[in-house]
Length: 235
Image (tube, rainbow, N blue to C red; front, side):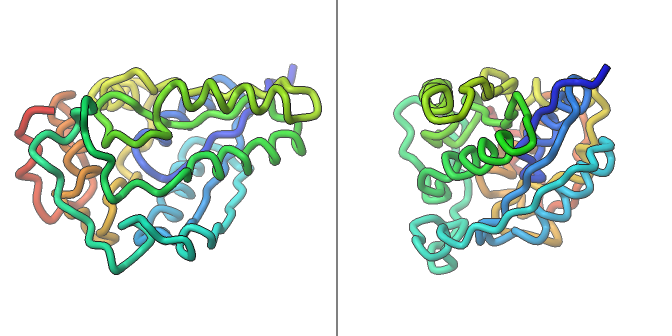
C-alpha cells in the first residue's frame, strides 16, 4: 500500500533535519526548501540537499523568494544590519525582545508555498521544525501561530484537509538532538549559523543554542566552528 504523502519544510538546519527524518519514517516525504536572500543561502541549500539525499527523499522543490531581501528589516537579509552575538540569556522567551534576526512573517510565506504544493501533489501533511522552547523568541514559532494557520487552510483550500504538523515545537533543543541521534538523522550535514558559510561563528543566537543543545545531550557536534566557547553557559 502507498503511504500518505507529506511535505517537510527543509531549511538545512538541525530542527528541520529531525523533522525530515520523522517525515521520511512515517510518510512518503517530499522536501521544500526556500532560498529567501539570507546570508548563508547557498550553504543552507547545500545542507538541505544533503539531508534529503541521506534520508532518501527524492522529491525536492527549491523555491526562491526575493521579497524578503527587497523588504529588508532583518539582519539575515539586510547586510547593513549586523548579526549580533547571542545575549547571555539566549533561549529565555519570557519578556525577551524579538531580535533583529527575525524575518518578518517569514514562516507564513513558507507555509503558503507548502500548502499550494500540497494541494497540487495531494499531500496531506506539512511538517515544519518550529521550536518554541530554547528559541530566540520569534513570534512565528509559537503554537498559536500554527493553530491559526491551520484554520486558514481549513477555510481556504479545496478540501480543507491538509494538516500542519509541528512535532518539535514543545521540545528542548537537547531533546531534539537526542531524537535526531535516535532516528539516525544526518545532523553532521546541517547548518545553523546566521552568518558563516565555511565555519559557523559560534556566537550568534543560532550557534549558541545549537552548541548548548549538543553539549547538554552529550553529543559531539561535527560541523566546524570558529569558536565553541559559548556552549558551556546555561540554556
